[in-house]
Length: 266
Image: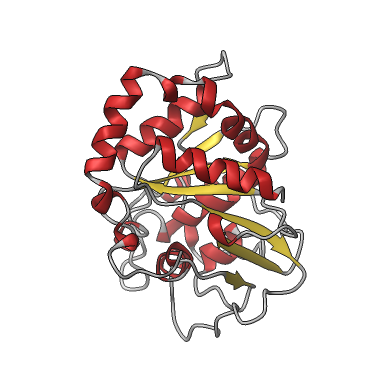
C-alpha cells in the first residue's frame, strides 16, 4: 500500500466529504493479524455486526471460516462452497412445520435460478482482514474499499464512480446478502476489464446492523485508485458540490456517529 496515497485520499476525503466516516478495506492473508481473530461464535452471528462493532470503530478484524457465525458469510467470503440444506426454501416460502422462509423470493424455483448468477468462489488465503482506512500500513494490499454512507455521501461516491466512464452502469446493485455486496461482488469485479462499484446492504436480514439512513458502497481496488485520482478535477470542486458539502459539515455528527466527543479511535 502506498502511504502517500493513503495520506492524499484522507486529506481529500476530509476536504470534500467533511464529517463523513472513513471507509474500510479488506484483503486476504495466510495468517491473522495478531490479536484480531475473534473466538468462534456459539450461535448464528451476522458478520456485518462484527464490522459495525469493531472495524467501523477503528479496530482491525481478522476472520477465518471458524470465526464467521453465518453460513452465508462463510460462503460469500470464499471460505466454503457449502450451502444450508433446503436453501431454496429458506430464501423463499419455507417448509411448513420444518423451516421458516425469509420470503425474499417468490418461489424455490426462482432461488435456484438466482443461484446460477451467484456461484461460490474460493478465497485465495485462509483469513480475510478488515481495517479502517486510517489503520492501513505499508504491507497491506487492499482488494476493495467499503464505505458505509448516507445519501449525500453516496451521491458523491456514485457520481465519482461514473466520472471517467461513458457507460452509465459503473455501479451495480445486485440482489444478494449484505456480506456478498461488500465482499463477494467487489472481489469478483476485480477480474473484470471494467470493474464496477457495488451499492449494497439492501439485505433485510443485515439492515438491523447498520443505521437506518445508510447503505454501503464497495469499490474494487483498481476502480478506487481511479476515483481517488479524479477527485481534484471532478464535480467535487464545483459550486454544486459545495452546497452539498456545506450540508455535510452542518450534519457531521449525524454523518459519523462513531466520532462523537471523546472517541479516541482515530
